Length: 554
Image 1: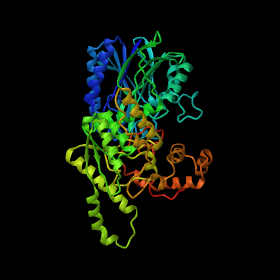
Image 2: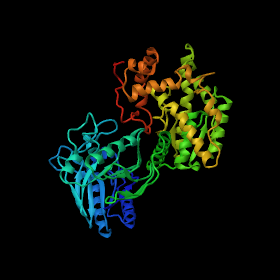
Image 3: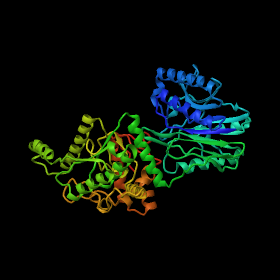
Image 4: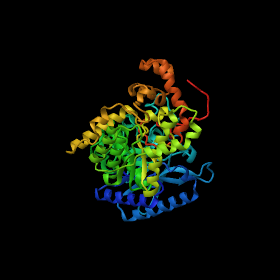
């Protein structure tokens, strides 16, 4: 069978546009001689739909869109496999199911519902969907398909030492006579995910001695980024067809011959992280209805990286950098910001906050007179910058991109209602040490295209500083970022104890405990932060849920 792998970028809830794209890709697949075109999990509705599935109107319109799509297949000479949200049986406790439908000859010829519902990290499917009690093999043009919706194919009992579920849907379908495995997915990208998925499906193909097709969503939906990278494997677990990463694509796989299209894939880890951030930023801006963005440019490495990502995402003509020098800002920082803006070819405006700062200090002086200056006065500067950016956003309708990195946000080295103001926290899951590596990628890519690396050398080499008091450096309050990031990775991503981190990283236990307490103490800030793009296995946001008011300490 000639199978088209159609990795599409859909928008949650935009049923008409998603259906139109499905038809467009189906026509392309038909012209390429495909007999079956396979789309990702929830291709019609978008993933994750979250509480939209609680709306009866959403379920009604999804059902109508699926029927309309099925009718359109009367004019196509191939079958479609499409993921969507289905109504559950009336007797079910939950009224929706994560489903896939085969559309052919103007009608729906087969339905399969998801059996294994992930409820961990960013997944909450057991809240929304009723699991399938059983599944059947689907016959299309002589081929007997084991159709697995994402998690249903990720629970191979021979791959995992410890499994989340007792059932192995692929094994059950193979025992029913399936001769081809088709897995449709919406599996958010993070560092290490691509390697893991290929290991899982390599093992499955070899275990069952069957070819398999893995079709994956591409695009950003809120905090989640999906990388595409769809593939097909022969019965030996070798890659026989490969789609692009972080782009829509259509590839053809001939399951009988075990051959297919091979498109470039598998960028290096940091390059993939950069591409994920660009895609996530572009789609968040576009899908939320914005056309332009604002970035506060301090002259530092974080804002430089965010500005470069924004330019890659929406074009230089849609990015405005705002320099907001304060009473302690250095001349070289403003010069670095100006040089960056010129190199990126973005508009740059300078709005000093010194007069505003002096006015606020004067206003508060009667109440502050008996107190020494402290972080209060420092944070006023940050909050004035936040006010400037949000005022410009209100006036001109541009989205503000915040520039805080994961290291700072983890320990609360950021100002609530100040530098945390904005609509998207682009690098909130990027540790500071990675920020420097991604910034180097920016310069390398620009230079490869024959241009000048846009981020000034001084931005790389100067000590990081918030410049909220004379001579301030980040290391006045924090350890070196190499040490800090090692502690944070152990505590946040691997849930290691203080003593384990200290032993594993050869770091003083008292320092580790101090950092861990800062992480715990600043949960209240993170829960008021802008949504951030997820690129690590454990990001702040929907996949990490800790109480604010608690007294447990390591």
